[in-house]
Length: 395
Image 1 (cartoon, one colour):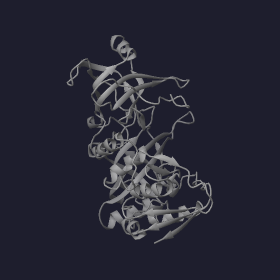
Image 2 (cartoon, helix red, strand yellow):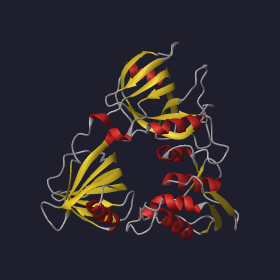
Image 3 (cartoon, rainbow, N blue to C red):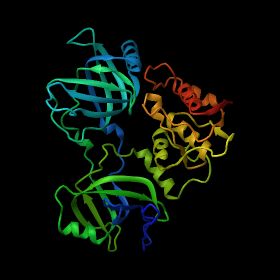
Image 4 (cartoon, helix red, strand yellow):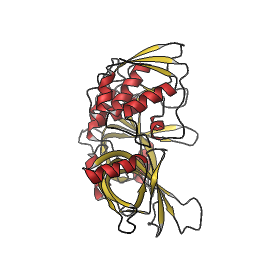
C-alpha cells in the first residue's frame, strides 16, 4: 500500500491482461480487493440514448439563458451547455426539502410566450440529466425553480415548473454491468452464496498494465444477478450485476480509446490527447494528475495552442504547459460560470506564453459560459488566468 493507505498495485498471476479490480473500502480506509477482471461490459454508452426533452414553464430567464432564448426565437436551436436546477416545494412544512438536478449538453430548441403568463416564457430544452436527487420523490404540487449556470454557478433566473423532470427515466438509462474474466476473492464468493439485499456499494478501479490503479474509479452497486463460467475459459467466471453505476451517465464510446491509452501508463510526450474528439479529451482530464503551478518565482511556461479547438482541449493544453504531459492545472474552471470559489491564486506568479492563440480564439468565439453571456470562453479564460496571477503573452 501507499503512504495514504491506498493499494499500490493489484497482483494478477495470469497471462491475460488485468484491466479492472472490484474494491471495497471500510470507514477507516482499509481496502479489500473483491475481484480481479479482464474486462467489464456496460461502462460505455452513446449519450444520445439518454437525451430527454424538458419544458421550463413560466420562465423568467436572465443573462446568457435569456440571450439563448432570444436567439432561439429568432433563428434555430441554441447549444447551451450545463444548467442546474433547484426545485423548491412551496407547500413543504419542513425546511431543506429542495431537490437538486444537473442537466448537461443542454440545447434550447424552442422559446415561446408562456401559456399561463404571457410576460414569461416557456423554454423547451433537450438535455442529458447527469445527476438527480438522492431521495427521489414525487413531483411537488407547487414549485419554484431556481436556474443556475452549471456547477455552483451564478443565477440565470427562475421558472414555475419543469415539465417531464420527475417520473421514471427512459429504459435506456438502465445499464447493468458484466464483469468479464473475473477472479473472485473470498469476499465475492461469500456474497454469491449469501446475497445482500440492496447490494454492496463498491468501486470498480481501472488499472494500468502494471496493475497500478489509475485515477478512474467508478462507484458501483454490486448485487449479483448471474454467474457463469467465463467465455475466456480457465477457472474464471463472468458476473452480471443487477445493480449499476452510481453516477447516472456512463462514459461515451469515445472514452474507451482514452482508457486504452492510459492502460499503457501516463503519457511521456506532449499532445497525446490531441488525437481524441471532445468527449475523449474530457475523459483524458479524468486521468491527469493535479499540478499546482511552478514553484520558482518568475517561471515561464510555453503553451502549445495548436490543438486547443474546444474547451477540454484548452484545459489539456494549459495543464500540459504548466505541469507537463499527464497533468492538469488545479484551478476550478467553474469560476468562469460564477462559482463562488472564485478560483485560487497560483503559488507564485508566472508567465504563460500562449503560442497559436488564434486557434482557440476562433474555435471558442461562439462559446460563452459566463453568467451574463458577454465574454467568449477564450476571453473569459485569459481574464481568469490573469486574475489568478498569470501573465498571459498571446502569440
